[in-house]
Image (cartoon, helix red, strand yellow):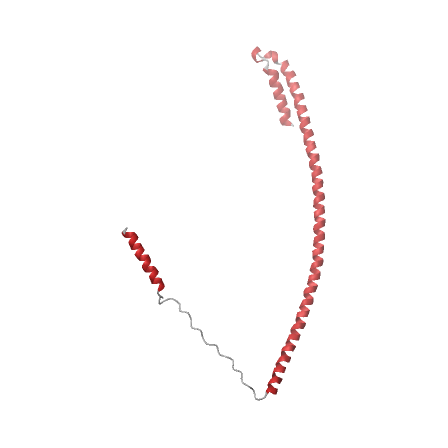
Amino acid sequence: MKRILTLLILLLTINSSMAIQWPWQKKEPKPKPTPAVVVTKSKNPIQDSRLIVRELSVELKTAKAENIRLKTSLDKANNNLKTTELKVIEVQKAADALKEWGIAQQQEAYKWMEKFEKTIKRYHRLKLIACIIAAAAGVFIGLQFMNLVPPPYNFGVPIGGAGLFAALVWFLL
């Protein structure tokens, strides 16, 4: 209980001390007054208007020069845009041709895959036939050697011969 009470008092003092400005905190700068532009009335308005017209003519000349520069850069950008559009059309044609080539290659690969699958089926069928023939030969050879084995085991000789010959043909083909 004492710990909780001391912790609570500590937290309350920290919170209350946060409300007080610390001496090392940054102080906000005071706004500085901006000088106001004072317009004085001229005694010779014609000269002032001539100065204004000269300034305006200088600004007009610089604006015209800037306008000419912008027109040339706009023409360059338009030329670049036209050449880019032509290149995009060429790239699109090349992509379409590549797409057609890819489709043709896929169709050809599909045809070859079908032929391969048919060939594999035929191979396994012929392999099975060869194993059956080898098993029959193993049975006949086993029948020849059946009389050399004692009677309870003599029926296993043709079966073993058939299995042996079939396995040899299956694994060697």
